[in-house]
Amino acid sequence: MRILQVTAEIFPLLKTGGLADIAGALPLALMAAGQDVRALLPGFPAIVAGVRHATTVADLDTPWGERVGLRLGSLHTEGAPDLPVYWIDAPALYDRPGNPYEDAARHAYGDNHRRFALLGWAAARLAQGLDAHWQPEVVHAHDWHAALAPAYLAFGQPHGRPRVGSVFTVHNLAYQGLFEPRHFPELGLPPAAYGLDGLEYHGQLSFMKGGLVFADRITTVSPTYAREIQTPEQGFGLDGLLRHRSGVLSGILNAVDDQVWNPATDHLLPERFDLDRLGGKAGCKAFLQKELGLARKADAPLFVVVSRLTEQKGLQLVLDGLDALLAQGGQLALLGSGDAPLEAAFRQRAEAAPKSVSVTLGYSEPLAHRLFGAGDVTLVPSRFEPCGLTQMYGLKYGSLPLVHRVGGLSDTVTDSSLENLEDGTATGFCFEHFTVADYERAQRRAFALYRRPDDWRAVRAHAMRRPADWATAAQSYLAVYRQALAG
Ligand code: ADP
Ligand code: GLC
Image 1 (cartoon, rainbow, N blue to C red):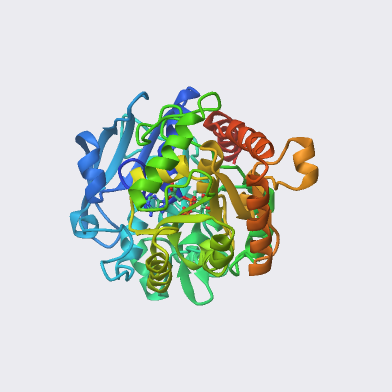
Image 2 (tube, rainbow, N blue to C red; image 1 turned 120 degrees about the horizontal axis):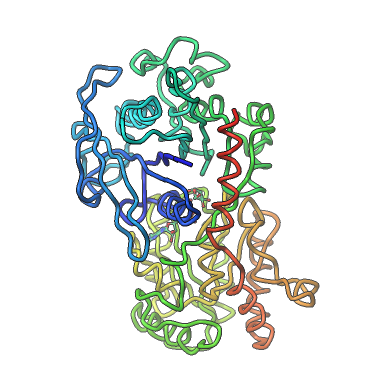
């Protein structure tokens, strides 16, 4: 099947969060399953620099009359076939430093509606036959950035050719791409695309809604989140629409890219390890404690956080539970960036107890790997979490996840309750309610288990063995693509 992946980020070229990891891994998994896959991205500087051998496919005029180019090159990944990548050559829109969505002062760019409408529009043009050598049978759009692709496609199926299926994946319903309605006429969509059954959302223009209304099939990144977004509590006002479309909505759990995240082969770790060579994990911990200036105690449980510092991630609980963590002899190492007050609060805690708390503000792929490699526990207390990848990296690297039982966290982590220990199913620690008391109880459970080395080793072994391969997820996506093709 010819499949076009439409995304704003792709690992290893451009990443602000888990979307990039998925957009990088899914095409390779689909190719490994014998499919003919290409990706389409905006021509951000990192994409232009990283996609090799680009040639021109077409020059075209956007609906608002701007001349842009469509290029085709390839993305090379070690140990995998090259992925053909289309990118939109529009320097006036994309050649800006830093984050793809915001300026240096963290303000969304004023022309984001054009920057990302163009992504969906170009996808539809490819579906309509813009590249004489390759036309997709299915267009798979990710998150609000690509969400207009199904809308453009719904109003512009190719003439005289088989219809093209569309799939829209919600990675996070909290980010919707909302704009003032006065921008609608710029987009080149017919008036019928606006309104209650279209892009209109409480008087605003919603890109997310474009994907949810017009895609043949909708997926999200875990089965639990697929249910949660159909409730008023987590539906961001779109739960009614999602319930209405529940027949075409499904949750497919994200997987882990073994080429990138595997402690047995990970060259970003100071020492590699697996279940038969756990000495390497102890080595990673000693290395990290030294690197970060933490007390070099092999037996101090090391809690790690690798996260965007935003409201979603629930890290206030880590701050509130930190005294208890330190009182029980634990250490905390955090890597993250985001909201200024959270950054300041964590920095302050590190300054107050530098031997027990380390805080690195910023973004570092190598340090993220070293943290999972060294950690005993990975903290992911998110208020909500569509899937979450860091808890899965924690599982694979034997850094047991401690999570709020929501979304994908609840689909991937099994609490170390007595029953689960007895059954051999435990892989981490879960708390039910988003309260300090519940969080601290889970934290205590982690300390209690740590003091029972045999039980700890058994849980860690089970966590490290948990299957998280992309081959299974790719088959689930293929089934959805077939449904989308059928209409
Ligand atoms: P989200 O996409 O909501 O941020 P996920 O858990 O799905 O959450 O994915 C986060 C991804 O970003 C993971 O690959 C994680 O390792 C990475 N990450 C988050 N913050 C940082 C950081 N400060 N430095 C390096 N990697 C980070
Ligand atoms: C989003 C979600 C996260 C998910 C990621 C990849 O960023 O917040 O839970 O893992 O997308 O699907």
